[in-house]
Amino acid sequence: MILGITGSFGSGKTTVARIFKSLAGARATVIDADALAHRELVPGTRTYRKVIAAFGRGILKNNVTIDRAALAKKVFADRHLLNKLMRIVHPGVIRTIRKEIKDNPAKIIILDAPLLIEAGLHKGVDKLVVVKTGRDKQIKRLSRDRGLERKGILKRINSQMPLGKKIRLADFVIDNNGSIQETRKQAVKIWRLLWKN
Image 1 (cartoon, rainbow, N blue to C red):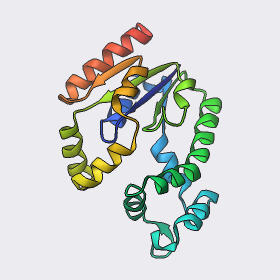
Image 2: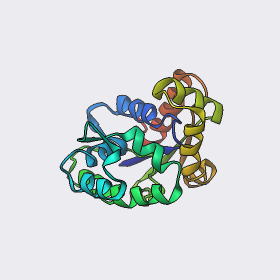
Image 3: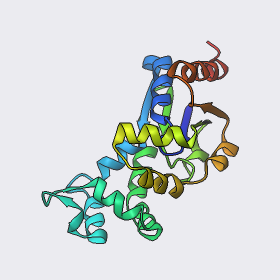
């Protein structure tokens, strides 16, 4: 069973993925697309070299590692540059996700991917969960947890597929506007429907 989890920027996808993992225990593994994307940008990788060639050495910290905040500021200000970055990073991430799914012995794979639908990966999951949160809550959460400014958060949210479109493709929707306990209750309900245990 491959369970895809997606949503908008700061909607709480990773929290929901962790809840499902806690329900499944040793039977499940989580594939975190964001973590894989970060791995693609490690110094020395082919993707790292391509990103520097495309965006210049000005995006480097201490002339070595990619300053993800500086890169994000640049690409979220210009849709063309964002698309350029995605064309460089996504193929490697998608290849790694497909390989991990194929090679993983776990009975349940939880795929936590913000651009799951945009990358076409939703076609390979058995069930799709979309996590939704109100805009004000997203902004508050991202300001608090990541130290981002409202303007930057809105640029990132607006760069993604509208949440309504994602919801139309979902098998299940989790409303993450309430407490963690309320979110967990919704996940448990979905879990019981899927695995009837």
